[in-house]
Length: 345
Ligand SMILES: [Zn+2]
Image (cartoon, rainbow, N blue to C red; front, side):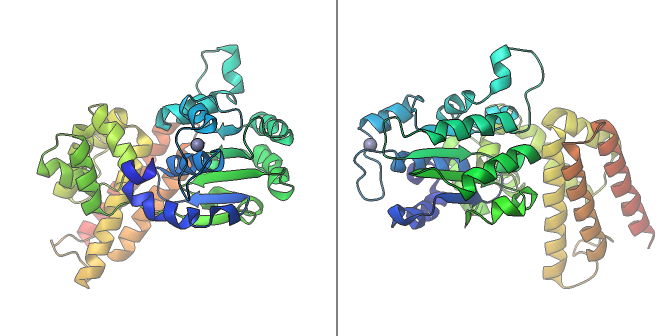
């Protein structure tokens, strides 16, 4: 449950469930990646599908609650891109498998990073019948920005003409990628990440990490659940090496080193951390109130903003880039060129 395991989301859960019978049929949970929005959605589903809820809490003992824990509730539907599998809890994963249509052929092709129109049509079909055992039906669409254009259009029908007693809960860290038509039909709920101090305490409670590691990980800008998975996979040292390298060299974007980090940690993660680093540098300059940073580096605020957008653009292009290597090399080269130009000023 959120309250015990993801304390930073507890206030949002409490706010949503205070008068939960009045909640609209479509919710959009927005907030940074890796903070547990899908877990929050699952907790709401537990409540909506419980036979004997006690105030804002599911009873944990009825048939509905047991079926969710057993990952076989017939009125709980999860849509998620198959490529997101590793980021889902076991319960979410098992429910999501029903809609991974491609997997039925057991082909060895790369898992799709999109939610397809076929899976939304299949969801439409499931929701159009009455609830199997509960009073309500719940569909969670995790990372709804993974809906491709046709899938988003198919979802519109559900949002515009909701089937009776149905809750749709969308989650997204990049809501701007969702079509306005989808966004505008959902009640948006902003979910906060824990602050650095709370994140340190949470990580320290789960892993044997020293103070330096806790400091670096909590500053990296990655969500708690993502950091948790990195530590479990033994990749935290690679992330710390990247973070400390950036701090030590203050934005020296050495191509070979950066490509090495991309190999170890994955390009999307490296770009996210770089963007976070640039953002921190910018904030430091704003706080210092001067054009050059307190440590004497020559990146100006304007250059940092440009670098921030360059990295954001690279993150956007990464998913669709025909040649990931080329996209990364071009980004790192541009950053290094700008750094050198800045040094000559
Ligand atoms: Zn129950």
